[in-house]
Image 1: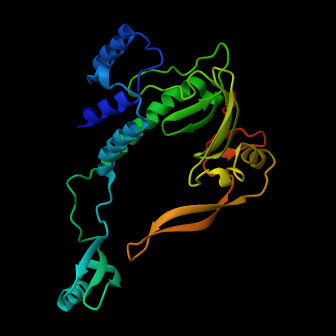
Image 2: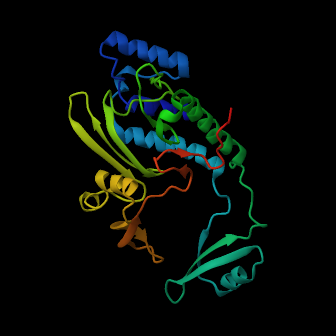
Length: 293
């Protein structure tokens, strides 16, 4: 099953940019089969972002089942007074909410108490932790090449300063290889306000300058982009300017199962809780000590 969705994801990613002729494309398919033991279909290798996202979601969901919370909230529709009383007096469960639907029906959400829930046969936190630990070690193998030239890292990505005469991170077409997200372009300015909170200016191969801004938890539509953007994040980092408020909209489900749009303010600010930062904007892990020779 994993190989099936890996095949779909890889095919929906399209051809690598170096595959221009049929001969190069066939070599790529053969190399992927040798390396990953997954046979790609020539006619199905077409860039399809939606299908790729679906396949990626399925792959992450399969892994996520290993770490899924076992004692989930449950919902029961109750029309009998005796059943309702049994739920309230049952020592093995805890009733969270009771919602009257009409004069004869109650909608009850409940969960098992910690000592009473059934252990799931699909949950294994050791396997789930092992996968993330291996991913972190893989990321460290890239960081060892660039060392202090790294300016930002996340779960599976790294932004670093490339210098002549020093090793760059190699890219590839296989699982576990890094991918050049700029397709040959380069970043001229980069600023980060914390984890999953950054912006950069980059130049494409054609010489066009573009700006990318990503902030977790804030949908950067036109209105929000007037408040949170590259220059604003840069000012907050360099000039330590004040936080700003951004109006955000979100779809939510009420207790009555109606879907509504809620508008609420979100405060955007610089967060630097995971490392120790110096005045020159360099950073080190907490507990870091320089070796004295």
